Image (tube, rainbow, N blue to C red; front, side, top):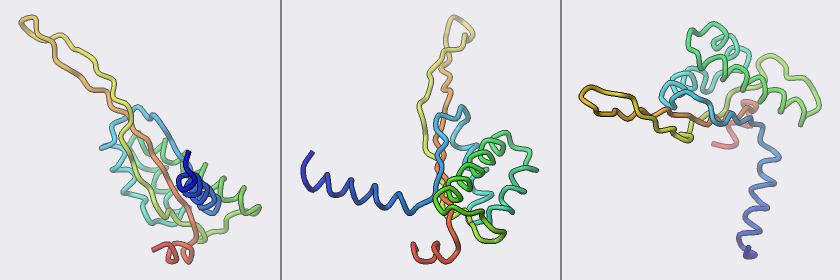
Length: 136
């Protein structure tokens, strides 16, 4: 690795130490369905977001709720204190496509229809409101 790449990687690694996030990888639901849930909580205060996710009828909401709890725990671990009500917000959440499993389903007249079983990766960042304004 060259010096420039090495320095850039080191800077990225240092920047991640000040960010509080959690990742959920290889979730066996389509990214489109997961984005509906992610859009519901983007920018919300974490306690309100947990309530929204708990009472949502979507199957993906339970997975995102567990991910949000993990991100809150990461914040508490790095800051060595408990998060207070109204302090933490979901600053960023995004859903990326994961691996797609390709399968065949029998179809009429000897044909086969292709089925794509999609998966996704979810990344969720939490932070305080004044910290959020500094990043934008």
